Amino acid sequence: MSEASLSNAFFTILKRDLTLAYRTRTEMVNPLLFFIIVISLFPLAVSPDPVVLRSLAPGVIWVAALLATLLSLDSMFRSDFDDGALEQMLLSVHPVSVLVLGKVLAHWLVTGIPLLLLAPLLAILMHMPSSSVPALMITLALGGPILSLVGAIGVALTVGLRRGGVLLSLLVLPLYIPVLIFAANAVSNAAAGLAIAGQLYFLGALLAMSLTLAPLATAAALRISLR
Amino acid sequence: MWLFYHKLGSPRYFYNLSGKLLPWFGWLTLLLILVGGYWGLVLAPPDYQQGDSYRIIYIHVPAAWMSLFVYIVMASAGAVGLIWKMKMADIVASCSAPLGAAFTFLALVTGSLWGKPMWGTYWVWDARLTSELILLFLYLGFIGLEAAIDDKRTAANACAVLALVGVVNIPIIHYSVEWWNTLHQGSTVTRLDKPAMDINMLIPLLLMWLGFMFYFGTSLFMRARNEVLHRERDTTWVKELVVE
View 1 (cartoon, chains in turn yellow, purple):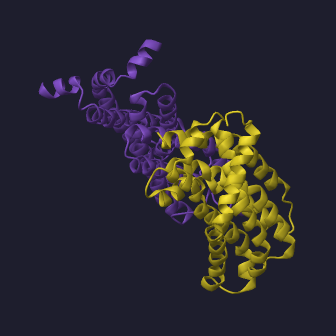
View 2 (cartoon, one colour):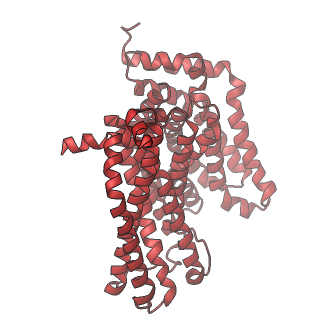
View 3 (cartoon, chains in turn green, cyan):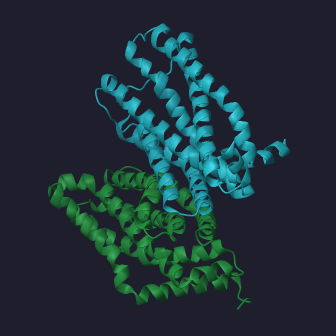
């Protein structure tokens, strides 16, 4: 067991989490349903007028994606914490940050990718011009992993707490603001026919930074939470 | 230097030292705020555009500066607590958080009170206002996390990680908000531009700022001393202190 190489450990974690997610499919679908329902509330609450919806769409879709991610975050470490698997991970010979990265990647594959695939459908519901759909998908592809990575820090800090859910949103949502700004702005700009390269570069930079720093912070937070 | 630093980590040493410094800090706070307040509110000339309503900056600007400064103090203390496992650093970090939140809140309230006569509205989604609001959320998250974890040591370390993540994020949030605002509404908002400030306005501002710094020091010491006594209540030196 201790002979397993680092990449081996990484892929084992990834495969394990994906298998677990597959076995609890219905649980994984809930954030997606939440995503769709929240967005469909807006035409009901604000106005079914296509012009209004079009101007709201980028922000609404992104806020809903953020909240859906937030809902799904709790499951990232919860079951492992409950059955003690998380402690075993901390005890393993491999750096915890790499194992964390495996879990975050699994989380993104299970929740981020479906959100990404649902986005065009919701864009139609919100009357978004088709020219902005690719921008929406690119921002979700770049921003989604950031949401999972940064969220993992918050989950790691609150995993030991009984009522961590609301606290988690208080900790994590302010940290999501830059992603929200750049992503929603890129989509609005694309709808208006403007250039979006600048926003995408920013999102890419944020992704690179959170990819390098967030697993370290998550690992440190896990060690503190499990003490 | 290192000796002093490590001594400072001892709650007992801190308690004695802060007890000696506290009166100085308290009186300096009072003096600076009285002088700065009188100079700023009465002696300083009125602004040629804003008349007398600009005088709120003597509260607003120091509070806004302090809101950032306290966050830095909190995060540095958190880092010290994580690295050297110093009890005092944990206490300083946890006592700073409510003070920082209060400064942030004060800056927001005074800012919006000033905004009403100047901009005609209590709130605009101006970049600075928005980042200050987000800073308040960060403080509240810190306080919430600390309250949620029962074990003091674990709470302090968890909060330190959060504060450090926040330190990395604050510049990003600040610049992204600024960028968002400039893209969205340009300069429709008449912001308080900084022309070469009259020296009679600048000096009271700096005095008020120093007063706020000493106020922070004073109340940090007071809170930290209480916290020290509470956390060390089972040690002999605290018991001797109580008996005295």
